[in-house]
Length: 450
Image 1 (spheres, rainbow, N blue to C red):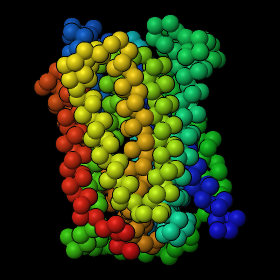
Image 2 (cartoon, one colour; image 1 turned 90 degrees about the vertical axis):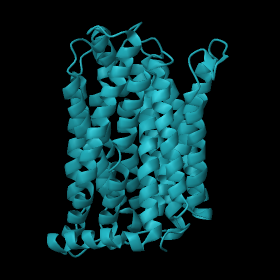
Image 3 (cartoon, helix red, strand yellow; image 1 turned 120 degrees about the vertical axis):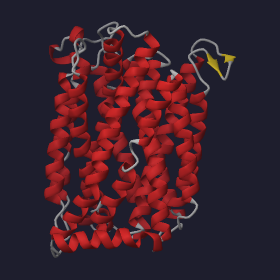
Image 4 (cartoon, one colour; image 1 turned 135 degrees about the vertical axis):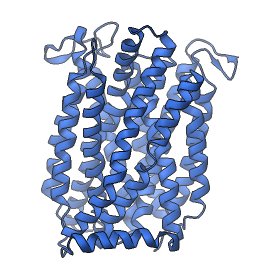
């Protein structure tokens, strides 16, 4: 691999580094739990009991993610086809990077009192659309980066690098910016930097602008070092016809069809587990934002290490064995969550603090298995496409990840509303989805269509 190739791969990895804080800081460990706290207080102020207010807040967050997921699902294949039709991907990455920055920056305006929950959901959705679509076009560059023998390592190392960026960004937030709602101090006992007002939760709210700035700065290496392989524009009409032909061919391409169907299910469940992990910790275990942040660091560190390990196993044995093991680990975690409260485990009393330790272990397993599953799924998609049709294929891959993205959040919202229990509302729908994904994975060929 030449110096130019290595530099190009490093530039491509910097997208994972730059974009990971949207998942780590906003979706899971800082903004998501902050939204849960603010929304719970809002609904409690409307007369709901504490547990009912927490369930209502979780359901509100879940419906917002569902609507965003439907929008992404509808647009992803069309945008992928258009990009392949124009022969260009970089202009699309620039445009959606702008949405990422705008949506995340505007989260600053979710106030702790009299919060505008709807606008917060809208801005979060705009940023999420930017992240997801930018990811489609950067993933589409992957087949041109290396040969098949190195694809697993490139994908796994990219995820590992991204998770490392997530860890560092989370550490900065916890140590220097995000204040505890009780003490007004950061994790190491400091006032938030830059004179941010703890009473107005400005330290925690700064997670939005911080995420936007982080992305803007660390996308510079990507745009400097990653260059597209020139392609002939085929035109929009030809691109749409190609997409139509691809969709019609799916019943005859059993492995690709099964991979899209399986990933549609298990990625939906995994994303919901990420999205609601911090919400669960805040609502069931009563954790503070700083405690959830430490939990996030442990999970992201495990994800970085095991994405790197999984990438090596992927290149040596293929992506499918890594995917199977990862899904079984995630099912086991959901079974633990289903039976655990702050002081008991399936009815057996727990000593004080034991439930917290168990959930820390669960977080590390979620990070490890989730990182390997995402990386290997990306490799498997590369094994089902060609460089000329990569954006179209990854657009369809994004569709498979989002067309049912409303199911897990909606299932959690519905199960939580019916049961009135956050732990049951989260665990049961996800277990069923992971099991279904495992069944469909059985029809996926180990090396795809290579």
